[in-house]
Length: 393
Image 1 (cartoon, rainbow, N blue to C red):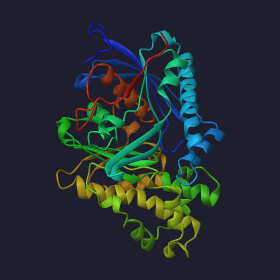
Image 2 (spheres, rainbow, N blue to C red):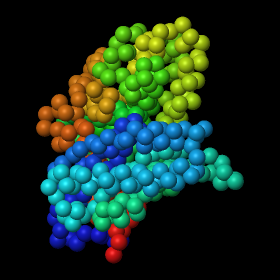
Image 3 (tube, rainbow, N blue to C red):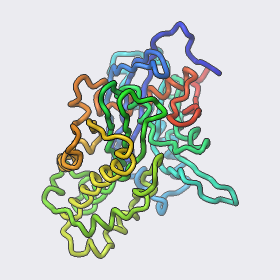
Image 4 (cartoon, rainbow, N blue to C red):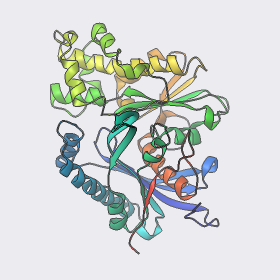
């Protein structure tokens, strides 16, 4: 198997770059990497989030909607996202005082537009698929740096989910010799990684739990013209509705056993509009709807912990990251529901190995390093995650 780094090279410099399901910015992290596999130790050297121009964000959000997406726009967006990702990487390299020639590789998750891990029949074939835009060749050519992209496809083609990808980094950095830990990331979607003490890679429990901020954000935009519910200002003025919450909890995805993954293809604009059409919504104030959707996020996480983790072991520490960790109402409800465990933000963890805001950027730098070192970063398969785009000769 190819190894793109000679054995005598003990340290590598990689850059991880992504835009998440909230489409609110481009995260870029410069990472020094020592070793690979279970011996990999990433050290974050620089991190920055660069805003996505409103016009581009709106183009992305429009084309995330199957009813509004167009093939010409998706083709153009593939190259446009590659271009703006490359521009963001250039900025970080310049601002951190490095030169492009010092960077060994860039690892880009791109922007997910569709994720279909469950096979659907197509022309008689059971087909699953995943679709991220942000052309790796555009980035490699713009930067003059080897670029890795498309991290989900190899695992999906072997029958696994292709997501979430964070459990590899969670296992690498947050496993503990005495504590039973769960790592909870609440972005557009929420995902959970649970590990007993001295956990082996094959024993890690991981899955997408469902909507994190995505439905809350849609409600904030719909009712108040704001991109998100900052500090839970809207939801704190309302009261969660048990009838609406119980109706929302009937979603089939919540009952599905791990491993499992989801995204905006399920929790879409149409999904949100269907919620607004529920009879249970008709008499509710807009603040109450926000409060109920906020309660849904924490309740879904807790119920799936009880169903899929607690029968095997009870955690004593829940470490929360992502935008949802900055929502005081979500954090309050998690602390109440997980009263048997210490619930804290990742940045409040003693000797946290990386800042929470940089976690996913570090993740993709680590995943890129694994591929170039000839290692599989898949938690359940032998898939080699990522595709390589070479810069001009």
